[in-house]
Image (cartoon, rainbow, N blue to C red):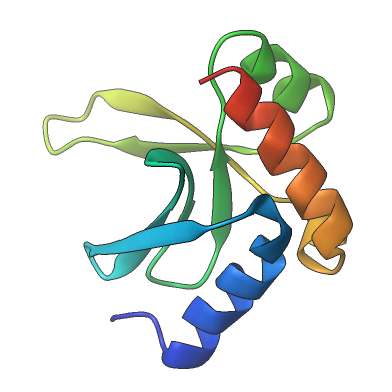
Length: 107
């Protein structure tokens, strides 16, 4: 299932204060870029995730964020470098933007 125009608009509004954004559709979802650097994805089901690398991984874990992981076809688990935004950030663009800016500093 592909994202609806409303889901895409929601994500773009959520991060509008980041500055000029660009996107790329992929696997039914959407990747979001700031200055050419991917910092967030929107899954095909509408869930929003931030990319976390370096020290940001520890911060996201300390904040209790859930990490995106899945099981490959061969049965091996894979942890992706993305964390689901908490409900509070989905309801507050300032919080979402602050988290995204912090994440970008570590990419």
